[in-house]
Length: 128
Image (cartoon, rainbow, N blue to C red; front, top):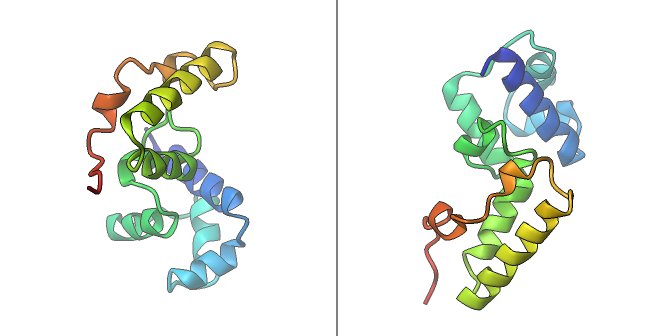
């Protein structure tokens, strides 16, 4: 992982959000050119600012840094939905995910290994 990854990931998050770099900079309490300086590679965010950027885009920092996650905000939404599903719905979601991966709908089949889906998302706290 290098500076290029950080710059590209922030650029991806900005592009996927549909918001302008200026607006995001202002929303984060920074100068209007702050995000542009990050996406251009002229600057790197501090760790506290990186956490703030992750919070702004509603993603986990670990997902920000995972190169195997092509779209962290979407993954985060899927996780939040999955955390509230009953077991039979989770099994259906797992099967659908596996099917989409095997039909070439995913970035790579390797990233769609669903054998450990329950273990990977055991951080979910189901509400009783």
